[in-house]
Length: 124
Image (cartoon, rainbow, N blue to C red):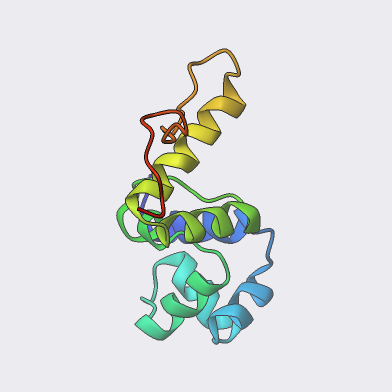
């Protein structure tokens, strides 16, 4: 059975937290946490927001679908930084990652204008 209660407990255990620690993270008492995990009571949005900040995958918790989980702080920083880049910068990051994964793959090289192309005097 993969219901909300089971997923909530699963997320708590994945984070390595006791019911008391998880309840504290969610801003509720241990008894409320127990009731959430037993399906006797449903949490409110304040609780869900608080446990999301503690690392709970809300998409999985609410839908049962496992999204691409970001495992740690490094991955969160990389993803956040990637999202802040423009299209050209993102392409460069993807090329770098592919080169690091497979050094034998063809490399993306940006075309630089050649100094020998034509005899243009920059001063006129």
